Length: 573
Image (cartoon, rainbow, N blue to C red; front, side, top):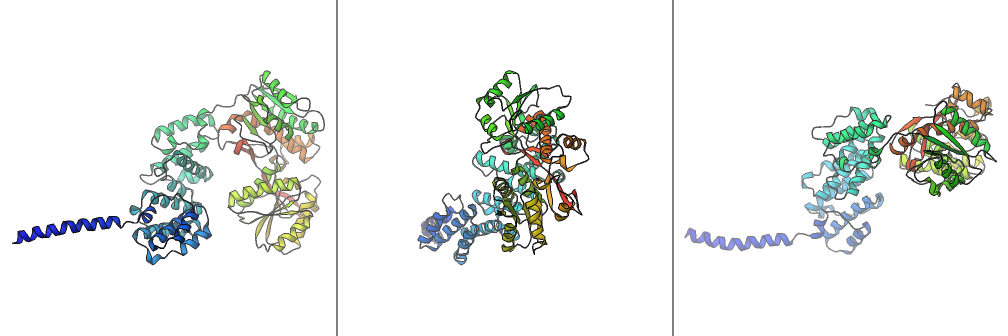
């Protein structure tokens, strides 16, 4: 009897169990399940879907997808508003997990790092899908970036490549890792010890340390990187090398056979060409390299470069004037020869064998932004004259400031210097760095007006070398008390032999002395052209600044900083 009963129960149970299983399968909501995967549509699409649907579960899932995309689009305010509308009490388990992850992402976007860390701890990584795991790690990387934690950024991003599907994503990730390491403190990197099993992080640290150790002797770098590849054969950078390092293996030291120097040596610009040529020749000194000099006022650039190539030149230094640089950029003759242009124009672009070097106001303004940021200021104001110099300098400062701080500089243009002071007063500034552009008379007028206002204790004032003139005396120095200004190293050290020589040649004209320094540094750059062109971060100390190659091989200058103190000029710190 018991056997018959058991058989009957089995017959009744099996169909019932199958029915329950089928019911469970058919109850899976595809919209809710989709939140485990990548979201390919726009935030607007998901918001519209959330507004249109009447099903509570669908609405929550669409809202979660919308918040994710708004975070991707850096729309912090909209993301917070949509997130606040989610009915938490109505969520199922799948949505609760996604909600916890999204809340951490949103907090990280808002810079609320402690909240983001707490939210991540509430998420069980083992429950996450691969796409969710990717966002989990990206959130860790964002938190580390918020905290300026270079090792934290690299540690998190080192895990990402295994989740990316395309090499383009891996390349972008490795480039970010590499830039983070390049910007990090060298001593800190050397002291960092990876944890057990962190082979990807260990490989990155070994690579940056090899780079830092060899950047001043770049001829040894290709072999050092090959040795690193043998030591870390499975590292992601072996197959997807950071973009900056991809040309290192092809690097060859600069070999100068003959130099063609293209300068205006007649006409109105001759005075400029003469002083640059003198600086170039003085820096060359007894070097046996042949230098052929060509007058750019006497012929077109295309013909001059063709002539230089026929005479065996391995590098062209020049031209100087912007119109001539534009002419050079259009010349077919610049193929198969290195060119160090002594100016840059709006048409300057990345050309395989071309670098651009000059004393542009843009590079000095960028240096001003960097100095102000290093000094701890996080609010920047620019007072600039309404002219070409003011516009170019202010735009360059603002661009660099945005890169450094993630915020916009407050640019105030003026026709009369005092207008800028009134404008700043009306803005209700409490504490900021002020970068003043203009000549000596304009800058001192603004400084005196600030000293007589309630802005005196609120603003730290910086300016460019344009205000530094040999005509300035003790009265000017006293009026400018506390102001920091940038200057080329040649003029920052009045005791050097180079200063004495340039002063005599230029009759104490600071503008001409800067051009002498530029000529000297043009020789130094020419002798290390391949190093600047192919070794990222390679730099030398010159008379116009610490020189390194930036984007499109524009030579960037780190300047000396001086300060007016007690009626004299002192080193600024």
